[in-house]
Image (tube, rainbow, N blue to C red):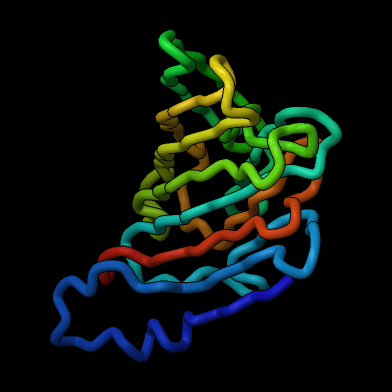
Length: 197
């Protein structure tokens, strides 16, 4: 697993005369050397506190011996029943929705490609964690995803997910892992800080 931590560079780039720096790359984690159990940001310590929001871009595939798996996001190591989420999706020509309350992780849906999916097919997501460093707010999470485990009708999902982490306080870490397998080789994630505090 390779890890690049650019937090030091990002802090050095922020100056008092910059009212809105846009997106600053905080770090990159990948499984280029082989499958790994989880991606954790940051690899050590805590997330930087000088941004308003976080943006996480993920490309992943599971090692599970099935067509699909569920990708889980945990904030600050929290595993209590504190995650709620709502999903809307399109599958072939059909639309649908689902809700999950009091979960022990933020459920990024069970349709991420796994070992029995079409070779070289990875799911993608752009995940936002809003107000992650505000001790007076419960963090809100949204995600846009395209997931497929084949290229036939009924196997490609376009999804929007929104949810709440029902614990007020600053988010100190982010962890991504599959429910039933590891992050397969060539999975990767990039974390960005958005908006200066």
